[in-house]
Amino acid sequence: MTKSLNGKVALVTGGSRGLGAVVAEQLADRGAAVAITYAASADKAEAVVAKLKAKGARAIAIKSDQSDLASAKPLIETVIAEFGQLDILVNNAGIAIQGQLVDDPELDGDKYNRQWQVNVLGTIANTRAAALKLSDGGRIIFIGSLLGSYVPFAGVADYAGSKTALVGYARGIARDLGPRNITVNVIQPGIMPTDMAADVAGELPDRDAILDMHPIRRIATLEEVAETVCFIAGPSAGYITGETINIAGGLAI
Image (cartoon, rainbow, N blue to C red; front, side, top):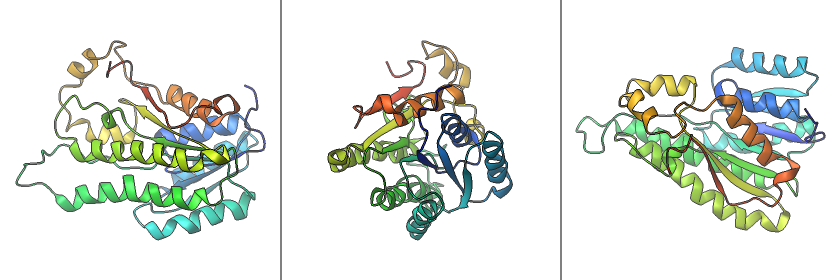
C-alpha cells in the first residue's frame, strides 16, 4: 500500500470501534498520524491506538463526549498540541435511535432529541472548531447514512433527518472552505456489520426483505467503506467536493 498520506494528521471521531476503528487503521496504513475520539469505551480506544502504533503510526485516543458542544474546541486543541497540525477530519461519531413512529403516543422525545444533539449539533461543533485550524488543502468527511437520501421503511424519521442535515451542512461549508482548497464530502453507507447496526436490528423490518431490495444482495463491509473514505481523504480527490457518495449496493437506484 502506498503511503499517500505521509505527513498528514487525521482525526476520526468515534474511532474506538466499528467503522471508525477501521477508518483509523486504513488512514494509518497510508502514512497518516491518527487521533481518535471515544465517549466511554476507553479500553477499546486504547486497543485501537496500540494497534496503530504497532504498525509504526503515531496515534492517540482522546476522551470527548460529542453531546457536549463545549468539548469541540478542547478536542481540536489537543490534536494540534500533539501533532502540530490537522489535515483530515472524519466526522464518524453518531448514535442510532430508531423504531418509533412520529405519531407514537409513547414516543421518547428526550431520547430522540439527544440523537439530533449528537449527530448534528455535536458534529457541527467539531467541524466549526476544526475549520479554524485545518490545513489549506485539507479534507472534511462526514459519515452519513443512505437513510439521509432514501428511506425504505418506517420508524427512522429522526435518524434519517439527522443524516440529511449533514448533507446540506457539508455542501454549505464546501462553499465556505473551497477558497482554501479544503474539500467537504459525505459518505453514505447502507447497512454495515457494526455494533450500532446490531443494536437497532431488532427494530427494523425483515432484513432478508431489505437485502432483496439491493441489486448487490449483501451488506457493505467496513473495509470497503473505509477504502472510500481514504480515497476522498487522499491526494487524488482534491477536485471532489460538496458530493454525497452512496456505498449501499445500489439500494437507492
